[in-house]
Length: 304
Length: 209
Image (tube, rainbow over all chains, first blue to last red):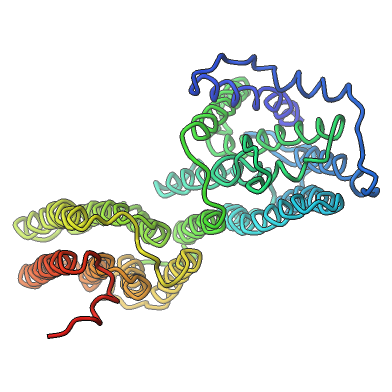
């Protein structure tokens, strides 16, 4: 229960912190941390305009997308706390509930009949397809580590045992961080600030959404960042610590994550479009190394 | 502790597949040398002191400093910035690197010989496979040299698998081999670069008396 509240609070500040860091590094005047929130409230007050060529799918998609992200939050544990819902193999459910939201987004982009949006939907589908194995190999090796298939206990053994767990942890944090960037269409893969439709991925898909729908999309993307931040913080937070330290650390890690994303986005250029698939595949390759390491640690592969 | 270095070494192989800049190859070779230093430092301490120090100096000085320095000189002399079109897209190279890693891990898991340290065998085997693949996919002579050095690093690890002794003579021979190979090939690359203004192997087919 606690994790849901914390994620919701973190999601409020997350886009604000990223914008603040980017503005500071870019030499601009820093906007308020709440500026993205004000934007969302302004959008909520507006009505939505629908193109006459769109159908019911286009109107449903933003709500389903938002609902799927909210649903995914219910499964996320934090430190010793379980998520609200938890059963065996729930991380598979978690991934695919996010995938349903993305699927609705893709077909709603197709629904508008615009050539640009179809292209963006294509790219989004390809990138999430390539990012999926990385996530599953990572979570699979964590599950193998503990012989446990439920999200809440996945991290329980992470902090004990050998030195090799540290390398697993560091590599897993690296993979998860860039997974968050891919899933949220941020910089190495997609530039949220680009003004040319041909080079957009996520932005071009929500080109036709306005008002209320657009606000839902913005909130969902903040929530997604907070979800990945929580997954990362679970690697660092030690379950035996008292609760107030855990909560304090949670916010520290979330804000560090936001600052790191802001710094990354300020200093690196976007990949070429053709280089994107191999870059995302690299995440899977690192996940395979994590998997092999886990096999060694758990003595499934015996090396003498 | 040895396992840590072995796994990091495996990760460098994946970065070799990923990177396209020639400068990155040299940096990665230097990192591999440092990792080999770590492997030797934590696993060979039982041998004679003189041999031990010799191997340590070999890995850290030759593999991690002198050879990368020389390669950098060759690179600057020939104005190399990028690899010129590998035959295979990088996308597939990453898959090949991962498959070679998985394959060698599986093979070593089946080798339950007492005389063989499978810890080193895994990455050594993957390194040799990947080095050969690296040479095949690149048109560039400089990259062939890099691929040769990846194979050589693999062979160095192979020599660790058969026991923790590592005789000095064998080691010296390998060292001489590498040194001469790098020197000769480096000079060769420089000469070709001077003559043709590019070091792609396609140019070699134009050579005549």
